[in-house]
Amino acid sequence: MDTKKSIHGEWSSRTTFILAATGSAVGLGNIWKFPYITGENGGGAFVIVYLLCVALVGIPVMMAETMFGRRGRENPVNTMHLLTKEANADEHWPYLGWMGVIAGVLILSYYSVVAGWACGYVLKAIDGSFFGVDAQGAKNLFTAFTASPLQLLFWHTGFMAATMLIVARGLSQGFEKSIRFLIPGLFLLLFLLVGYAMTTDSYFQGLHFMFNPDFSKLTGNSILVALGQAFFSLGIGMGAVMVYGAYLPKKVSITETITIIAIADTVVALLAGIAIFPIVLSNNLPLNSGPGLIFESLPIAFGNMFGGWLFGILFFVMLVFAALSSSIALIEPAVSWLVENKGMERSKACWCAGGVTWLLGFGSALSFNIGSDVTVFGKTFYDLLDYLTSNLMLPIGGFCIAIFAGWMMSQAHSEAELAMVKPLHYKAWRLLIRYIAPAAIFVVFLSVVGVV
Ligand code: PHE
Image (cartoon, rainbow, N blue to C red; front, side, top):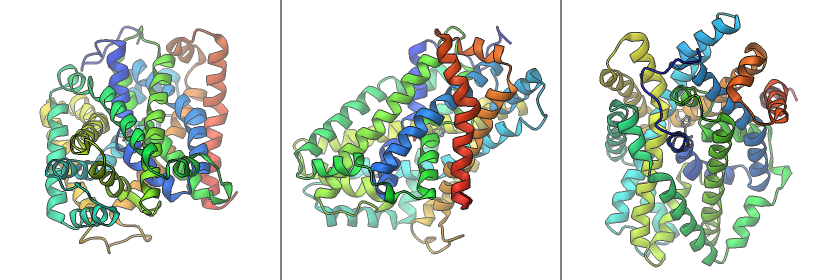
């Protein structure tokens, strides 16, 4: 398998891979989801658990997933087939690839709806809707927006179309060009927002909320949410990183690049929290207001700060781009599977996979308005999909990846792929992937089921 290359091409350089994988990792998960679930789960203690999940489970699993991709060089289903054969493992392992393809489509279906909100907010930023807005005004703006099925469906459709256009153009032209300026720009704007947050009178209160742990607020479920968020935010457990790994040149160090990417991802999430909580607190907004949190708080900042009109536009444009670079990773496993296994042309595969995802998205879009009463286990369609994918499918996928990498794949193969400079590093990775990561995921699941 050593000289094999993907039929879709390769990343042109190490930097491009870092940018693309960071683009996949950094998205709505960091800026929209991390703050709102931190708010819902009590702050500091949740953040600590989240950081532990990233370090002890997320990073080792992310390395393993990239390694699978680079060794197999095909879509997650085929890659798992090849690796299963190579390792002489049970014939059911390729289902892991399948689960990833399905999880990607499910996640993108609601991800695109929220990305659509960001698109709608670009327009609101342009037309001055945030100007001088207070907490109530910002809340009304968001409520009126999400109450309109037509608007949500319109933006969801637009966002899906943009995603599929980029994916249809393939690796180098579509992906690489769209991510080059995104990450640096996003960092810059986040720093600016943190600067604004410092001027509010609740800056330290916000920091206190985020970093002062109150472990009595942790429940089994919030630990599962932290674990699920680590997977969601890094974009692992569903094959996206595997496909990106399939396009990774042999000479690039997986250990180094993945560590850089995971750190960047975590820093963006923390910056988003540091920017948002002071704004939320100083405007007496509820910390646990759920998915609307950034949409109800950031307009207040933009509406009242110097240069806020321009920064507001830039911020939401950046958010749309960050979402786009994650969306293309979410749908790529399905598209590459259709191309490689069904012999479809890339553009046709895009419209098929994209079409299904787009239709599914209707369920989530409508669950914020006319369908909000339709619930299963007390959860709306959106909540249900989110729970199923982030908290169940991704951690289960991660668990299986860890078991395969640690117990099925031969040590010689993983050692060669990871090519760690110091033997101690490899030993540490192997310890994490064989014991710590699977055990942690297992215990978290048990605690939710109530056994522990
Ligand atoms: N990591 C992305 C985000 O934080 C979402 C994502 C999940 C992307 C899974 C790829 C795979 O927004």
